[in-house]
Each structure stands twice: as C-alpha cells, then as structure tokens.
Length: 485
Picture 1 (cartoon, rainbow, N blue to C red):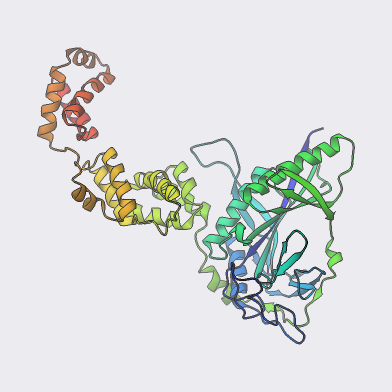
Picture 2: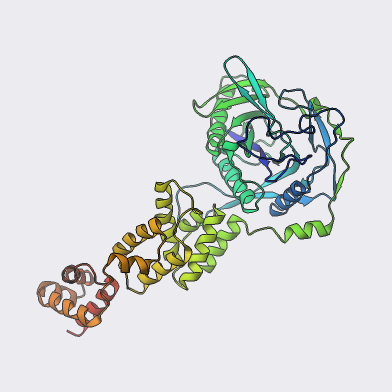
C-alpha cells in the first residue's frame, strides 16, 4: 500500500524586545545564569504581571505580514503544568482566544534545480498566539541545573494546519517563515540561541484517504536541516510500522540530528491535560483599527514579493534572486548597488554580490555589515567593466583589494598601477589588421560564412595587446574590418 505523509508544524519564535513579557526585567542571551530575573520571573508571593506592549505590537505585525485575522479581543490563560523550568508551575499563554487567526505562509514547492520560478503554495495557519517562554534545564552527569534567564521572554507560537506532505515542504515552510520574521524585525530567529524552535506533528495515511492517521510529535529539532531530516526519518519509521502490521502510537519522540535516530519520550498530552483557565491577573486585550493600521504601515515587502519585483524591475535571473531574497540586508545591498550602477547593470551587480562578495565574506568568516566593500564602490566597478575601461580578470584583482581595504576601484587601480583596458580604436585596428594578414585560411573560412573563424584572429590580437584589449571592442573592430575585405 502507498502512503502519504501529513505534516503540521508548531514553531516557537522569541520576540525581540528589550524586556520580558510580563515584567520590566531585561530579555537577552548569553548572560550569567539567573541574572535576568526578578520577583515576577521567580514567581515570588504577591507579584503581579504587567503586559509588554512591544511584544503585542510584534505579534500583531507578524499576523498582518502573514495575512492573519487579528482578533478584536484576545485574552490570557494559565496553562497548568509542573516542571522545574517554570517557576510559577503554570505558563501564561492564550488558549481559546488567540490574537491571530488563520493566515498563510508562502513557499516555493521543492523540485529539481531550475532557472525560473517554480510552483508556489500557501500553507494555511491555524493561529498565532503569544505566551511567555520557560527557563532552560542544563543536564550534567549527576545533576540538572535550571537557568531562568530565558523564563518570561515573549514567545510566539505559530501553528500550521496539517497541510504539508513532504520533509522538503516543511523545510521550505520554515525557511520562508524564518525570513519573514527577520524581515519584519520580529526576531533574529537564531536556532542556536533558542530564538526559533520547532516541533513537528507527523502522520501517514493511504494515498487518497481523507481521514488523518495517528500523529506523532517530534521534538528537539534544533536546526532547519534537522527538521527536514527528522520528518523524513519519522515518515519512514511510520511506514515501516504499518508494513509490519503494527499500530502507530500517539506519542512524543526525541530526534537526534547527529545520529539520525529517534526514541519515545512520553505519550502525547492533550489540551485538556493542561487544565487551562483564564488568568485572573490580566485583562483581555482590545485591538482597534488604528492600532492595526499603524502596524500595517510598518510591514515590509516580504521575500517572495521582493523576488517577483526584482525579476520584473531589474530583469535579474531567478538564480540570483533566489540567493538575494532570503537575507534582507543582502537584498537591500543589491538594490542600492543596482540603482547606483544605473540601467542595464543590475544583473552584473547581482553576479558580483552572489559570486564574489559572498565568497570573500565566507572565506573571511565575517558578515555583510562588517564587509568593507561599499555599494557605491561596487557600482563603480560594474560601471568601469561595462564601459570597457576594465577587463574582467583585472576587475577580480581590484575587487579582492576593495574587500581588503575598502578603497574605491579607481583608487586601487591608480595605487597599484594596474593596466586599464586598451580602448583606443586606432591601436586595436593595427593589431586586428596584423592578425587578419597573418591568417589567410581563417579569412577565407570567414568569407564563406563560417562565423566561428573570427576566433582565430582574437588570440593574436589579445597577445599583441598583452591581454589589455577589450574583448567586445576587438570583436566589433574585427567584424568591421572583415566586412570591408
């Protein structure tokens, strides 16, 4: 029997705010354990929570970017559970009245390498709600210690519908969602810092069946690649269970990305196990039209919207835009270079950024923000090449020097005494005449219509020019001289 997988993702995104969700204590990462705490975080007797409006702004903005319906009223609930990472023994969350309902995440369906935009799909969302994060348990050989620095940090939970069917779709969904959150300034989404965490719910069913199978939750997926690999592993495991005639058990499993293996953690909890009830210390939140309008005005152009615009406005190849759009800083950098370089030079600008700039950044183990190549200088380099004043090989030397020093290409050419391209037409004509006179066979072949015979003249011309002749100009002069013979 053939099976298809049905996949839904629960993604937790830490909201980038200065302070925590229900207190003024600072939010952050990398501090000494248990230093970002106060009586509210530690749940000391008599303390009361106070909402962080910046976190509310962030989740409403995220919902608007993803096309969610923003609830006119949302409320806060207590999710009851007892675990050392939660000082209060409950988590303030949202249950039956979340702030964002519906919405979609646009993905490009995976497929073979291509040079054009492929088929896109919108993965529907169930909801986005806001809650507080919990602390972090650190396990050692004989003891476990808890760090409450993370406890109370604003945390969004983005819940998708079970609408994905392959591990690659889930990978594309997470990639798109992460980029959207970064574009909007909602979060830095650094998975190593716990700013983006994902649980996957996976089931299988016979192809063509409408009813969902028994789902298994996969946890500890601490990289986007591990999400993809873990889902692929779980689909294979479930198909194996069914093939043996056994029943799939609803449970939570732990996936180890290093070994590629999973193991059962516990039977799956249901919502009623948490005994949700409204938080008596927090008032419901009313979101009016003016609040939404203010945040909608701050919503950025999203990655795929930007890609479609780049393809149309700048006529840049799909392969280049597919690299640029996933990094807002990089795409903004490209657009500045393209505008400074002028019409018709955007593709060349994109090539230099995607191939040369990113290579040097990777080699130097630095970032775009720390790179010394300014957009104006890269635009100048593109202009020099397009004008025929600088050959590509020389330009590559100049670029490496630009990356190291931050100087303009003109300054580097002057300082290093680099040879500019020979653009004197009279000088090039002399070299071309000599090349034609020295190769009667190629001349005869060209006259009979063999266009490729012109290449036999180009080598001698470039040799005579010591590699400095502009190839485009050499081709133009040769064709003009040959046509006159």
